[in-house]
Amino acid sequence: MLTLLGKEVKNGYGLYLGDSYYGTLDSHDRLDRAMTNLLAKYTSGEEKETAKFDKQISYINGTYLADSFVDESDIIRQFTSYKKNPTYYTIKQGEYIDDVLKNTGLTSDELTKLNPDFDMSTDFIAGNRLKTSMEEPFMTVMVTREEHYIETFDYETRYEDDPTMYVGNNQPRVEGELGECSVVANVSYINGNEVNRRVLSRTVTKEPVTKVIAVGTKPRTNTTAPGTTIEAGKMLWPVGGYDGGTLEEPVWWKGGYSGHRGVDITTAIGTPIYAAENGVVVSSVWAGNGDDRGNYVVIQGDSGLTTYYYHNSELWVSSGQRVTAGDMIASSGMTGRAYGPHCHFGVSVGNTYLNPTDYLPYHKQTASYAAKVAAHGG
Image (cartoon, rainbow, N blue to C red; front, top):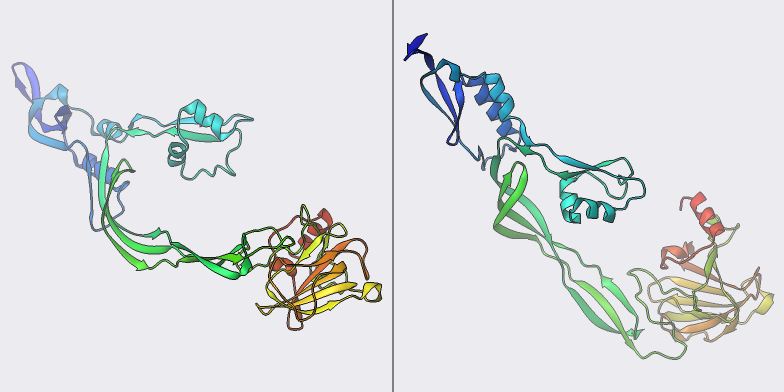
């Protein structure tokens, strides 16, 4: 070992991070490998990708004072450590998400970004922890890469007049579909967090499908069902009144009694019964108690489906009459084989009976109804 002005000196590598000197190393092979591995943690291996530290690591080979030498392992530990550790918030009993946001000073978007794998609907439980700040590595890593991904964009909505529906009714006829485009972008990250995105190109790969909504223009009458949005592929709810009645008994294969080929909707006697879809009345029969169906109406729908309305107290249509969804065709009752005032509503295609609730909007039901259906597969 040499001496210089009474000081011991030896050959080594002066270590610099930017302009700052961190000591002298005998060798920097292990440090280089550690820094390469640190960069690899933030890279994806894509062809068009660059990764670097915000401050350059450099070495100057020369003669240095012996007491300036530092252990390479200590430098590796320092350079791969954190200046600042992440902070966490422990959810307390009785707290809601708004309480956490207030106590941490974070916005909902900030909290979500800090906790991408945390499901607020299932994981928000007392005792669980939420990250409230990111760790700050000693070495800041900057990555830029060219990314290719698919992006969706919205469809247009077009409204079309339909004289076969009453004013106030509307129904989607064509469901809209999002368009898709292929995007190429340069994306920049600092310590794994995106800080900038510059789109280089967008190429449409799938055109959107315009949503088409039919809007009724047929003048309403005093007895027409209230205006509503009819779901695509669904019928109008057939029972009027202040609440539309309650589903009481399902079809037989969903837990209803043997041979029951429709659903029973309980409602008060005299409640308006409406045509569920456009069509032609093929039967309007005043059978009273001489037929299990009581006074009933059958409509052959324009869709190809047949609908059935049993146990009425009054009938307001005649066979051969054309009806529009929402026309009042009867008043509910308990004629025929009926345990109480209700509308038996059925749907068939040809001679095959279907589950009416597959063609109706969701409606309230009794606990008994729900239990029977659940026991038979929902």
